[in-house]
Length: 277
Ligand SMILES: C[S@@+](CC[C@H](N)C(=O)[O-])C[C@H]1O[C@@H](n2cnc3c(N)ncnc32)[C@H](O)[C@@H]1O
Image (cartoon, protein in one colour):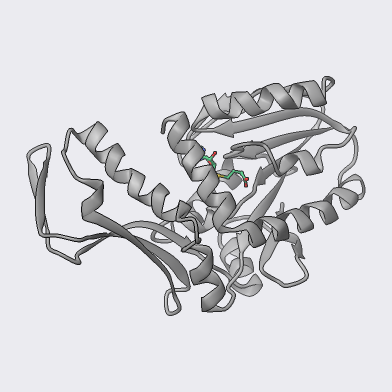
């Protein structure tokens, strides 16, 4: 992903879910007051998919010795790290480029309790129950004494969810349609972005948001040796975002080797943060 593409993603994530972002911050503020009681001694924070480092800032306190932001798009993270270093000169910040869906190693963080963070709602973006494999793998690679905070977006009424993924300014649509530019650049195709529109909605039966690019015309294109035909109105699934209940996510976690220690909710029960061990 280029810096520009990540920026479009960030804007789309932030603008489409202004209410949700506020809910997430509300919970993080609650947790920040409790962190000194939850963990003893010096801490290392390790964040998966840290992005702009906006949320973790709410949780940093004097006990944090190391902060390791891990992200697939490191150029973007580095800009935020610079600012954070100025704000917290005593914290050792060690950004690392990783793909968290693959095996990865973190730097040596001596004499600290390691607390991992997977904030946002990215756990909902895995296909075909891949989130179970992901959590199992993470459990195996993190030692038993370490913790994981994980953000989980909760099921709410369809109108609210549909609205969140169809923001008025069209950021979500812009982000999804940008995939056409990426396909053209990486696959040497010549697709016209104007021949597609974005359609995202909450699928009540599957309990997930589905985002599609819909073809406005009959068209065909070649990727490598393979020719693809898209009829007018035919859809390409480009995003899913699974939504959970506290019970369904606790059940999911119990099949991965992790134990749910605590769950925090905002006052409207839109979003939750699980502490796993
Ligand atoms: C939606 S943003 C969330 C940022 C931040 N955690 C928050 O909640 O505000 C997702 C971030 O995860 C990163 N990301 C996505 N897939 C990744 C992967 N497979 N490995 C590492 N980072 C990834 C993206 O580059 C982006 O910075």
